[in-house]
Image (cartoon, rainbow, N blue to C red; front, side):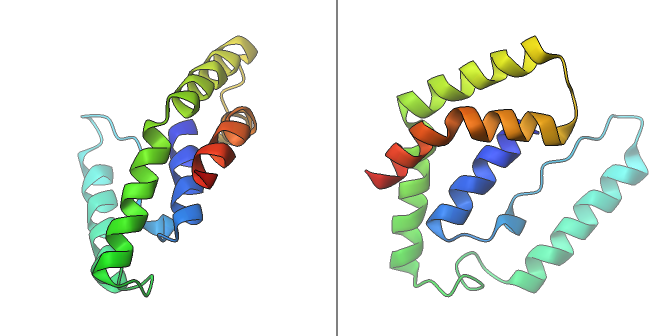
Length: 118
């Protein structure tokens, strides 16, 4: 949950469509649900087209933006703030996706902004 919110924020900032990441859970006992998730995601990606196309990016621009995104999520301060946010989530004990996303985005905002500005 929180990781998805963090990556979606980075994707928005670097100009990559958020729909290109879909993180959902399915247990081994939920084969039909898993098949539906994969089928829906595959259809959605086919509709968007190749990475960069829906975003209107040249291959060079796409490569630059993806490198920027990788640098941001690899940034030590971002990783530390994410770890601290995860601790805060565990401490709160509130397991709704909205609450988790709020904590993760709130606790990582400063380090994300700094990494994105670099």
